[in-house]
Length: 117
Image (cartoon, rainbow, N blue to C red; front, side):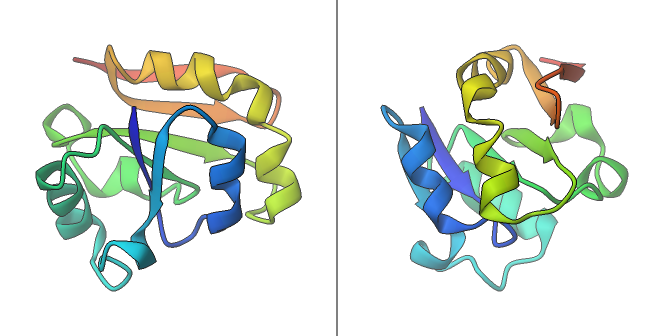
């Protein structure tokens, strides 16, 4: 799976996503893109999933119209340790993005599918 880490996600999280092609927005020239433009550009670049901690995306966009799937990590903060604590749930959450356009993974590992494709 080709995964784009949002600007608000520590790029070191890529190590917790072994087996996937992972890039950070800063490495693909999208660090200054607004969410709407970021989603479109990421889809055009062939990414399957945008991984973010930005909890506003679900309110800023029509989720059923998103050009790629979004995996939201809903943690107490965006520090690397909090994000890495979710690593055991990443594969299951990423699998959920193949059938749901927006998936939220909470701090306890619970996966919530918001919009089915």
